[in-house]
Structure formats: C-alpha cells, structure tokens
Image (cartoon, rainbow, N blue to C red):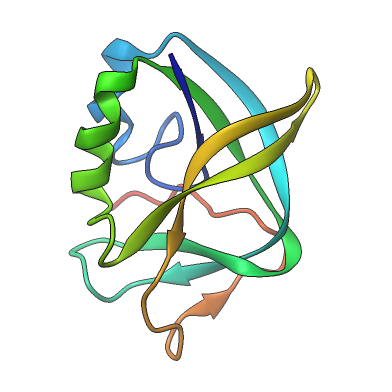
Length: 124
C-alpha cells in the first residue's frame, strides 16, 4: 500500500477521483508545510492546481492505495514533464505521515496564487 497526498482533482469529489475510487483503501485529511498552491487553467481542458515549494501550507487528503496505481497517476500527472513525484511529510490527526505527492514543474506566470492553501473543486 502507498500513501498519496492529493490536493486537487484526485481528491474525493474531484474530476479525476474516479481513476482511484474503486482501489481506495482509506482517506486521511491533512496538510503539508513549506509549499504554495496555485490555480492553473492552461495546459489541460479543465482547471487544476499546482503545488510548489515555498512558504505556506497546502491542505488535501492522503489516499491509501495499492502500489500498482502509481504508474496510472504518473501518466495522469505527466510525471517528469508537468509534475514530479516526491515524498513529503503530511500532518494529520494521526500524526505525521510520509506520502508521495506531485509537485508542479510548469510556468506559474499566469497562475493564480491560493494563499489559503485550498484548491476548490469547481466542476463545469
């Protein structure tokens, strides 16, 4: 089992959550320190967030998933091109947990900063 910290379209209720919903073994709300969140609208046919290192806090969920799901998520996130999978420490009510997450690698010049660290689920 792997832990995956998600902060956008893979969260419960998000556009891409269906990719993992039937394999989900648990969900733990939490946040990461030392990261900033941005709202992005270019590069995909729908809005999505990007998290980058920097001062701040980003809220999301730790999804407990079987390890074979990671290549599927790597493909979704265009791992190594648009996002990079990295380990982070997530603060949860159960204490700190190590988890994978995806950090945004793209251009932020037209991105909207989200200083509150929460990306809204806004579906068309």
